[in-house]
Length: 163
Image (cartoon, rainbow, N blue to C red; front, side):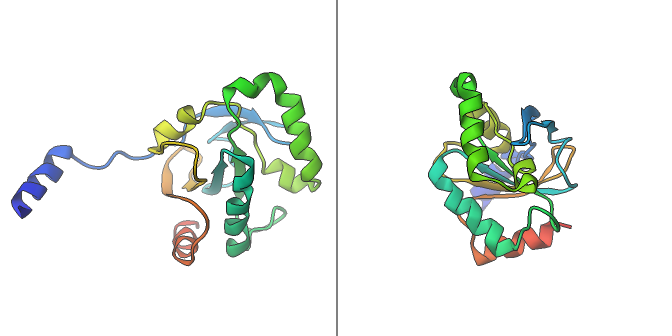
């Protein structure tokens, strides 16, 4: 059995590396950014959320990592709201802006009007049920990733990868 498993792993080859897709979008201050090259740090902690109620999970990471939008580790929040909502972009962005009054926090919130599958596929994720947390270099290399709310182990892993 062990030989069969080893043979199957050898035939499968190395695991595919995750690469962050290139997207252009505006932050909540209206500044256009092309990601990943336009990420604020190298690397940057990236939170991807798909639904409004997932902000709680993003906030769990921000709190446990002690992130501050005005200093410290670089991070961004990327709400993926779907390509069909592009026509309602002003309404969606204004709604988010009204809930985020700090301009530094607005600069870290970049709304992606893309289909979730276009963002997820290059990252090896499926679905929209859980947030994604990644550490990404400006060249698109994903150094680390996971899904879901913060855990003690996940926070320790981010801290060890983020330099």
